[in-house]
Length: 340
Image (cartoon, rainbow, N blue to C red):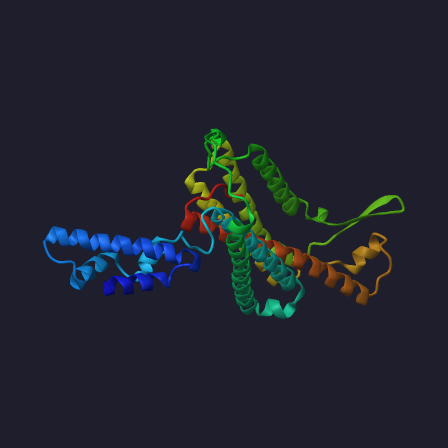
């Protein structure tokens, strides 16, 4: 029948050359049998009209051709879990690298600090482009491997049920008492030192066999100290609650996110605000650091301020990335494991 011949020919155009002849023969036989069966059922001759009814049930030639071919995909199910992990690693590395660069540049560039909003948007755009580009490269590599693996690699070994092993149930709210204890101790130490003994925060060196020191905290630092005290105090309270319960209830996750946000805001404000560290020429002379003129002291202060801003900028940027990751997992994925 002409319709069947045309249909088979159209299906053949969507098939690989090596398989085309065999599949066309098989399909033509199946279609002719279907038309004959339909003719006997309806008690009518096998004509073109009946063939058209059969072909409608088969569907478009492209669909029929696809049914004779193995599934086609860019990255197959065997490689897809690994592909997702690699994309995540590449994206995380790109974001962290650009976050560190942003924090470092924020600490060294007064012009950038004066236009931090525009700088942040520019960095965010760069992150998006870099993540998209990295994902595209990884996709291309995995697609090439998917295309060549079936031709180069031997077929996978048969799966053995003996490989199955019972795994302990994962406790999403588990904690590390040791880590929490260290965090509480160091946070309490920060509270005591910066509030009661701020003179201990400084530069230390050995001169003529004796330790010498000079404090570095500038008056501007103490305007931020109340906010630091709030952050440290609430962090201690939260850690004590979690440590007492030996788990992290859902509410503590959200409280942890709030404290993380407060930390990010404080760090960025420290970077953008006035210098929080400063060397005094008279103090340096008093401890025997040598006679430094005003220009040398100014250069030393500029270097110290830049170093502190770079460190705080990197810490702020990394804290912001970590906060965004936790918020995404909590809100979008609903699978936050541990809020660090």
